[in-house]
Length: 117
Image (cartoon, rainbow, N blue to C red; front, side):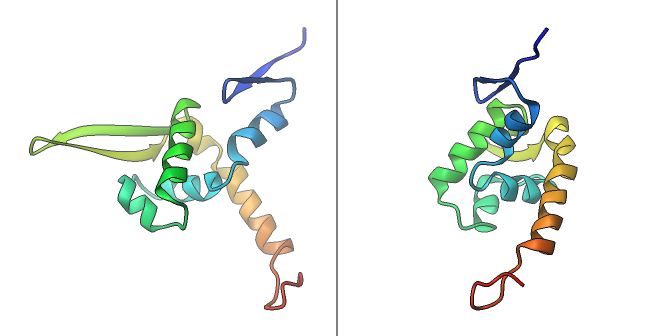
């Protein structure tokens, strides 16, 4: 029996392709690296990166719908506040993302002339 994998409401036949689809989108690794440290409110998270608010919101929504990020909403002085954090599934991807970061630091660093070192 052939296994089928689901990400972003798309079916895939390869688990590597499926995982790459989840974490390979623009800003997703940066969002996940940031959330790995502690939960962030939207504005705090936005200040840590150059992504537009729209793109950040879109990627957070994607990560939430795929079960990698949790949006914890709570009431505080009659105001609803929310914070974003990694789910257990999201945390389980951190070794992969950290390995990608390490590989990039080792092989993709360039000098001021944009030439690989």
